[in-house]
Image 1 (cartoon, helix red, strand yellow):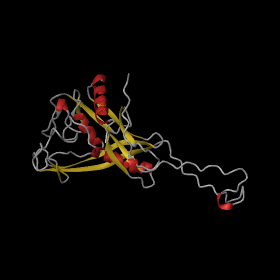
Image 2 (tube, rainbow, N blue to C red; image 1 turned 60 degrees about the vertical axis):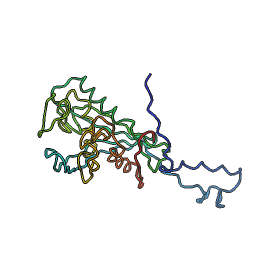
Image 3 (cartoon, helix red, strand yellow; image 1 turned 180 degrees about the vertical axis):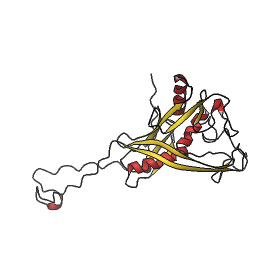
Image 4 (cartoon, rainbow, N blue to C red; image 1 turned 180 degrees about the horizontal axis):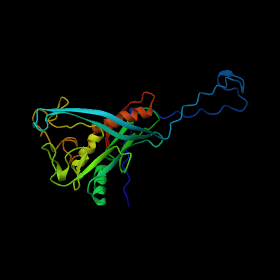
Length: 265
């Protein structure tokens, strides 16, 4: 029997209040509120609330820049890339779905591609939910990730690489070397590279002015307590979904504001 996804707790004051109940109908023959004559232009009915569309999908293509310093010379420098994916915000079912379309080149088996997909979806799904104003989702909007393999219309082309591959003097696990160079047998570092696709910078050394070693008390890379953008073996942190949060806010419209919370909090 498959397990259902955990339901996040109530968002409390972070979401809109439930819509008020409709007022009771007046007694037969009574004039409508405001004293207007029955059938008159001022019938007293409140204007209908705008409907909440079933879903809104936004295509993302944002420039990301990171500067790494105070670390290994092979890592120090400024790097830029384009973050691309789609975000579907379903305001009736209260869900946010991130879809990543990948085109894979090189030699790789269907089983290896399936392992990539499973590793990414398992690592990034059901970790956070968004508490947003608008459209009454009092339990929040759980965030899920879907990886799709395509032959065209891709967000990224990923090169399948064999163990031992290196790039710029750097090598990850099982041949993974970069955001678009993945080791065929790797199911760990690729989940970190997927985080870059979503618009997350590294959380190594000092990145964009933040010292992730906390004054040298933590390892600069792969610290046991680090989130996925520091230690790919670990889970994402709520902040790692913030780029998608901005897209959900745009989809909700009306100046919606969201906060991202870990499931279980």
